Length: 117
View (cartoon, rainbow, N blue to C red):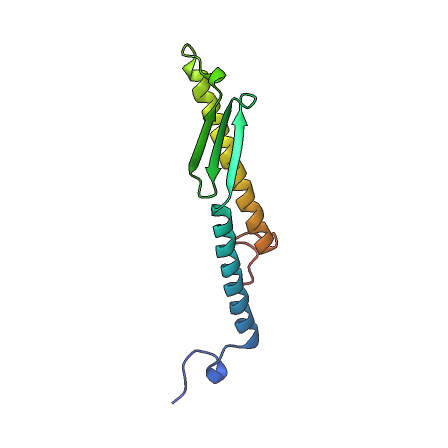
């Protein structure tokens, strides 16, 4: 009885086997890079440094530092805006680092585009 589907010889052709190995290697590198990113801290400040926010690579706020001079009971809204600005800047830093790491791994081809299959 004739075999249906598959490849002749029941094995993967050399090119497909190499492609699978490369994909597995890239996956391991991506996992290592993600772990490395998660262990980093990203700090940004606002208001000339009166508010400073630190965020982990997991995108969690780990520290907020506020200069006592920034605390004005008559202008709480300004302090809130400074905290938001510093937090958003720290998040942008995390995103930039993540994008840079992924670009190095994929050779700039981007995820989902430019793949040979």
